[in-house]
Image (cartoon, rainbow, N blue to C red; front, top):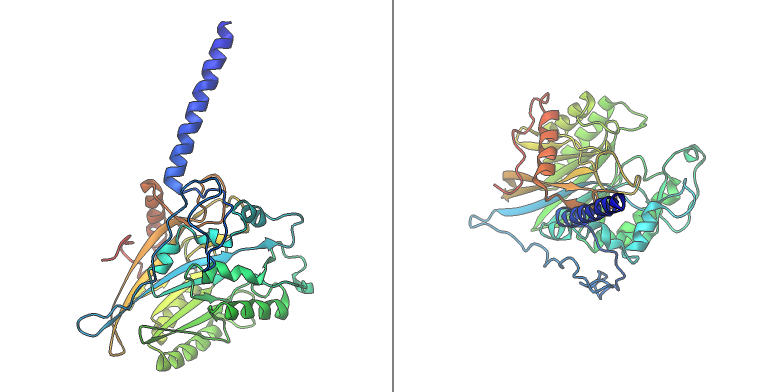
Length: 392
């Protein structure tokens, strides 16, 4: 009898601990409720869940024009890393992304639900879109042995257009996974949704606040040219773009996967882009956060890591950050540029990846992100001294 009572007591204490942890998890990580929602007139979900629970708040309007007393224009730009959504056609059965999408009532907007207010509170949000959007597909012979081939329907662009992602870079190692037809379908889907896109052959132009912003995109992976040859291309493209636009942003898909710091060729290319006239350099591909440099007063963000990543249901490192910068421009000249980061997890949950990027609330996790960036920037000559979490 005593043994039975002892086991009962242990079981009850375990239940109490489990519920206490669950409450803490919900508070710290903004776990998404399973939803069955109907889209409103603007295509976004109504502000309630199927079981009557209170849903996350609906953000307000996009940032209004900002003109200072001296006539200078302030432009706020947000950048995030890899958006890799859809199923991996190399795996049979229902994919992990499709399973989560079903849990969220088929509402593709769930991936940005916890950051939509951030994306709306700027003038331009840029993401690296790494996948293909097409209703039909054919796998090229050279891709058949690849472990990952990401595919989604063209309607997935709603996740971008409904959540204030205005531009995407499409120069990476997955946008061509289904050949030219897949790439063309993805481009058409972006254009139909009103999303500006850029790759090596197509600069993306975005106009806001009376300013023209040019986005140039390149990759260093499996290319028929060397880094030095790419440097020459970038130099020519940036100088031409700078003559015709107020701001030039260069994105590189570069480096090695799982790296926490840039290699020498990345450092060379990033600084060369600034030397040629670029106002901001953004990097991605490693799936890990990398430090930021301030070179000649301009920022080089070596890796933005993942944003919404459907390649793994529990990556070994789910930390990332949102990068934001503000340019103050007067009569065509950049007067100042400040930045901040928003440390995030690529999931609203701690125990598995549910593909919904979420700002971190636990200070110890925020500190981990900051320490990782600072530690891996120690060997960089121009690494930023601090990573502000709010505007100066």
